[in-house]
Image (cartoon, rainbow, N blue to C red):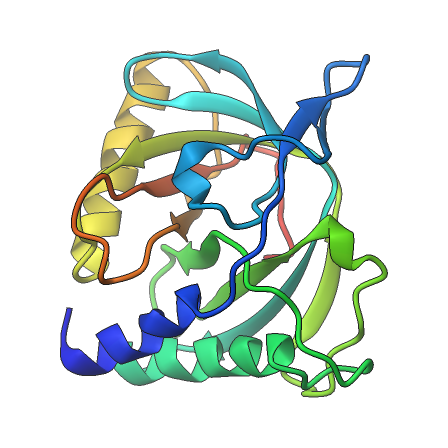
Length: 219
């Protein structure tokens, strides 16, 4: 990670809050005041429950959540990430209808399109349920979305994620495992989820997500 990228993602840990995960009586994840997964680093993160797991991936059911998102057509890697991150960071710093700061959360989720030619990618921040109702963004390039509960195939891995190839290699491993197990999924898109500050050197946590074949996310 170069100095510019480190400076960008250092912002990720400037604001800290807490959140938790419980399940309701119907087997769906619900956000509650409880202990968050350790890899969320004491930040609020979206509630989920693990439906099944193998040594290579988990099948998770996520609760209904709110996110702020922005998108960008293909650009140079650093500027592409910087522009999207700063729009979302502006929202949580107070560029919103309530004119108030909002706690940082995790993960930072990015949508990666695998189709050829110019593509639109998306970056999203999770909105802590404690913030409800979330204020509307002021920036017209930032949207607030309610995401219905969804299922995701999730591969977890550690280490630093320097460059798109790291994410792509992990997505390939996840895709191969799903195909081996006879599970159909959307092969045109995957999502990356980053949980850590660039200064964290050990026990780093990263994820790649695929959705079932007919699944969709506005993120």
